[in-house]
Length: 409
Image (cartoon, rainbow, N blue to C red):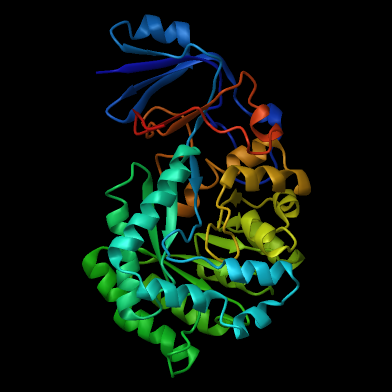
């Protein structure tokens, strides 16, 4: 049975936009008094409401009786929402002036989350992930990437990825898992970084394929994590095994973005420390530049150079980096809105970064746009002017959210 949603004061299908470079608001397609026809979780047609009434007279009508702006569901292509515990002590120390190393020496940092997540059972991790995914869904985020990386041993990584898989069965949001066993060399591993990464490649990744837990890997390239050379070898080995790759790149020092580009990774994420060389490399590649304003807000550091990346011709997506340490807020729209003011990003650039430009980072072929054949992942905001969404800096939340055509919020 077909269902006609509408009429909407405005609809932004996010179609016809370049996937790279700058965007002006005038380039946004805006359908006034529009409607969407849905069937079996897919979009059948997008047009003005009156024409759809005539073309699909037998459709069930889902009448929208207040002014609403309709958008595709947001895609958060970088999160760490599978974890247990908090790092509120880290945050208190950070805003009191302690450095990253001082916090780590005091027992904080990533290893703190590893310790707490290793202790947690799979039921707890599943429930935590579902709760965070459902909050995201209520706020219009219909597709969510979720990383492991707080296990850092065979049992811990498998437990996390199994929990993410189980969580996907208990939330309407789409969860896409990524193995981040290469988050850091675990403190209880006695070998070198090269030996640890070889263990991940030889022992862990084949098990992930056997259990079909994920087809994606990530690695943190940084002075406190893994070197450029070791990461390059690891990524090439993972890709030879059939894994798609993404990279934690240039968060505190440059070097990771070049590895991402040179290995053909889908995305390079963070980029706060990227300079002109890295910007040019990303602009001249198909690697998506994923900027993470939540980490900048949480750490009190500069934003990734989103404006320079766009001006150079890169594809820029915005993700939340929701994690217990550096980005605990997890509110994608607030983060994007605040960053847009600081970096002078147009409304078109921000909305594209949350939808159509985020989709390639996850190899999604049916999300990020309102188009016939695409999944009916939609969100409607209580306004008649789409510019209000960023104007209120993320405080305006969607009044209605649909996932595969089902009203879920």
